[in-house]
Image 1 (cartoon, rainbow, N blue to C red):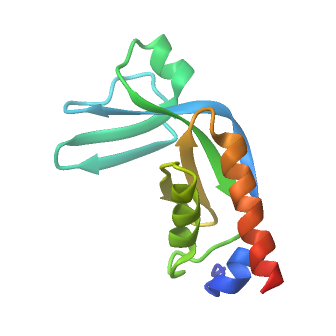
Image 2 (cartoon, rainbow, N blue to C red):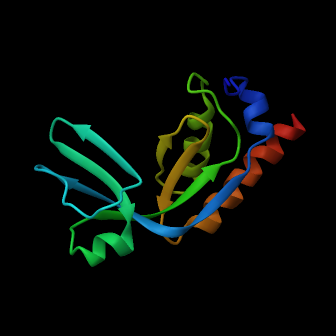
Length: 134
């Protein structure tokens, strides 16, 4: 069940779905506290990074950074697709918006600053519209 690799096809069919909750990034140099249900766990040399719901981090009195909204990109992109995320990140950068992408097997997901989700969805729609016109 391979995903799409053709950049033009990916861009023409691009849509985004805003997920309902605010997420945050937290890090731990020791074991991850019990009782958490992170969306993602990533091991780095300096510590373990978690992406989890802001409400969960607040409930556990955890320190965190980057309150963000998650947008799921609704195209089954291949893990080997070239340039897809670069186009999206470049267009968001033009709007002064950083993006933290996470690749899942079926979809890419982008984390954008909380409060900028409308801008990000507008940019995503414009990318698709421009690709359809080319």
